[in-house]
Amino acid sequence: MDNADKMPPFEFFSYILSVLGGRKYFVARLGDEANEALDEFLNLCMTFEQNNTSSLQGFLTWISEKSIEIKRDLDNSSVNAVRIMTVHGSKGLQGNIVFLPDTRFVPRTPARFVWDKKGNPLWIPNKNARTEKNDEIFDELDTLRMQEYRRLLYVAITRPKDRLYICGWEGKKQAVAGNWYDLILGAIEYTPDEDGIIRFKSAQRKEVNPEQIQTQKETPIELPPWVYTSPLPEPVPPKPLAPSKPVDETVIDESALTAAQELAMRRGTYIHKLLQFLPQIAPEKRKTTAEKIKPQDIDLPDNFFDVFENHNFKELFGPNSLAEVPVVGVIDGRAISGQIDRLVEKENEVLIVDFKSNRYVPSSPDKIPQVYKTQMSTYKALLKNVFPAKMIKTYLLWIENMSLMEIE
Image (cartoon, rainbow, N blue to C red; front, top):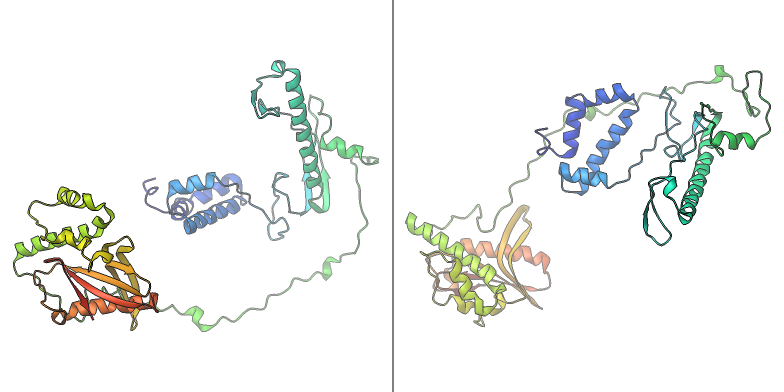
């Protein structure tokens, strides 16, 4: 049971049935037919895992809410066995020979908890506690029960193809009137034979000579050569390339000072988060919110909050903008996976911006490091497949002084 919270349902129950020998015990106790139910149970495990989050608790809840019925093929000459089934379970199936072993039993167990015609629940512990109106309810239930009982009789007597044996036995108590045996007996004219057995036969339509029956010989199929060879190993797909870390570019060394670099990274991460979430907060609450979560050793740029109102920035952080937009695709046969810090879709153009926390800020767009230009051009190429009719504009926002630069 240590594996119950670690294995998916199919793997868990397969382990019990195979490795621990559970299937062997089922077959020893219930016979070979148990294999059908076990196989169907494992199929249900696979069906659940294909359409749901794989967990044992979830599977048990799912299967307890399902009404499951397994249909067996009675016309299976390869199985040398007698199948024992309920009449309900035999619906839609047929067998060459069918036995009805106990046709004198009538289901007469009354329900103690019932509903009246107005939908009110009634608890009647025994017959002496009934009223006249209660008797009407129970009489109606008995009528419905007997109607279903007779419908099942029709199902039962129409299952055989060749032979039907109708059997019944009587104990010390007299059989209840209206049982299957008496219903069938009352519908036919009969004369028992010397053994007391009532037989009805129909003429054989066609004589069958056992010597003429030939088993069809299977012609062996020649398998192709690839069946006998081991398959080639599956190619391992390359790890998607992140546009912010291209393999053909040298990563910029933002600071040679370890302590300063660590502080700069934490400051960049903090400001990055503020730029992600503050646009969703009411303008009058942004400064208070930022101060509440600000580390003591980190200061914000003096013009930080201006970006939310400045006309050059406003639409990048407006209600129509999106934050942390994942983007994936293939460029020149190479898988690309990245995340755009901010994206705005307009009528004729799409604006994307990436935040940079470098201490060094270029004085003009032409001095932007090539690695950043490559990153943004990659984003632009990916988005062109999504927005083919719109112009894609790319920007860098330098966190050090909150300046925005467009990359042509």
